Amino acid sequence: MEHPRRFRRLTSFQTIILGFALVILSGSLLLMLPFSSRSGEVTGFLDALFTAVSAVCVTGLVVFDTATYWSFFGQLVIIFLIQIGGLGVVTATGAIVILTGKKIGLIQRNVMQEAISAHQVGGIVRLTKFTVTATFAIEGIGALMMAPVFCGDFGFQKGIWYACFHAISAFCNAGFDLMGTDQPFSSLTAYAADPVVNFAVMFLIVVGGIGFMTWEDIWTHRHHFRKYRMQSKAILWVTGLLILVPAAYFYFFEFSGLSGGERVWSSFFQSVTPRTAGFNTVDLTALCDVSQGLMIVLMLIGGSSGSTAGGMKTTTLAVLLTSALSVFRRREHPHLFRRRISDETVKYASTVLQMYLVLCLLGGMVISLVDGLPLLDCLFETASAIGTVGLSLGLTPALSGCSKIVLILLMFIGRVGGLTLIFAASTPPRPNGSRLPEEKITVG
Image (cartoon, rainbow, N blue to C red; front, side, top):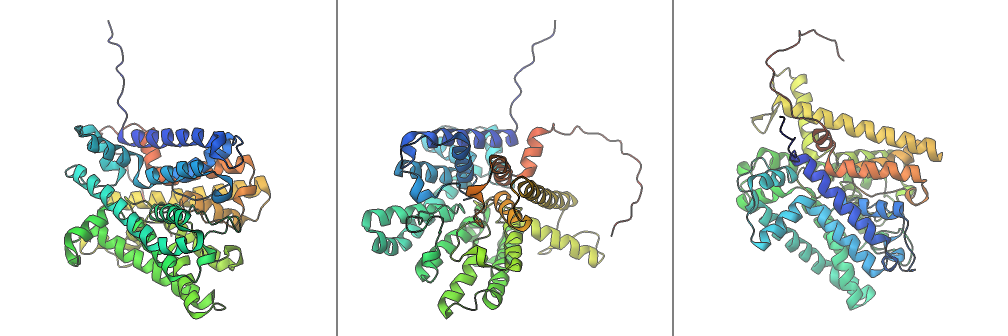
C-alpha cells in the first residue's frame, strides 16, 4: 500500500513570493473600501491592486494622486504597505515574532537569510533586530529634519504627518508623496531649492538603498574600510560613482538655466532619485532624450542587494564590469578588492542583466503597441516599474487596463527578484556527475 504524499514544504523563495502576494492582496482589499477614498466611493479592484503593488513593491507609480484621491485612512494603508515592503515581508514578520519572544527555527532563519541577502544563517536574528531598529531610527531622524519645513508650510499637525510620511517613503525608496494638493502629481517640485528637504530626502534614499549588510559593516567597523566585506566595498564605490557622474552631467548639460543653489540641488537630486526612489524636483518631461535615457539606465541599475531599493543592483553592475575587465586583461578569473569572484556569481549577474533588459524592452513595446504611445516614453515607465523606482513621464494614470497589468507584473518581478521567481517555480537540481560533450562557439 502506497503512503499518501506528504505536504511539501515551501522553499524559501516560494515563501517570500507568497508573503508579498498576501500583503498585496490584503492591501488591495483595504484600499477598495469606501472610506479609503476622499469621495467615499469604492475604488475598482485593478486600480486598488495597482496602488497596493506599487506600495508594497516600493515603486511609486500611481494611477491616482495620493494626496487628493485617498483619505487619511487610505494614506495610512499605503504608508503601512510601504513600510512592510521596504523592510521586506519576511523581515517584518520575523521582527514581530522576535518581539513576541517566540523561538525562530532553522527553516524560518533560512527564509530570513534569503530575504535580506545575508551570506550565512548565523547571526540572522541579531541582524534582523539591528535592521528594524536602525530603520525606525533613521526614518525618525529624517522626519525630524523635514518637520520644521512642513510644519511651517502646512501647520503643526499636518506638517508632522507629512514629515513622517515622506521620511518613510524616502527611506523605503517608494516615491509616494502628499504634495498634490496644489498641483496633482507634482512630487517635490515645490522644494527644488530647499536645502533641508533636498538633503533629508537624498540622505534617506541613499541610506535605504545601500543595504542592511552594508549598514552593519559601517556600524561595526566605522572608518576601517579595509575590514568591510567585499560586497560592502563594491556597493559604496559604485553608489558613489553613480551619484557623482550623473550629477555632473545634469549640472553641465541639463539645468544651466537654474540659479546656483537650485542647480546644484536639482543635479544631485535627479542623480540620486532614479535609484530607486521616484521623487522628482523638476519636470521630467522637459528633460532631453539623452537625460531621459540616462535616467532609464540608472533606474535599471537601482540600489543594492538586501536593501529597500529595487533594480538589478549595484553589485550586479560591479560584477559585470569586473568580469569584462578580466576578459580585456585576459585574466582567468575576475577580481574585486583583491578577492576572486566565482563563475557562478558572474553567471547570475549576466542572467539578471538579460532579464531586466528583456522585460523592460518587451513591456515597453507592449504598452507602446496597445496604447499607441512613443516607445521611449513607454520604456521610461517600464524601467521605472521593473526598477521599482516610480518616476513617470505622466503616462501611468491614462494607461489602459492591459498596460496597467504589464506594469503590475514588472513591479512585482522587480521587487521579489526575477531569479527568486525562477527558483521558486523550478525544482532543486539533482546531483549528476555526467556532462555533455563540449564544443566551442564564436562570440563577439
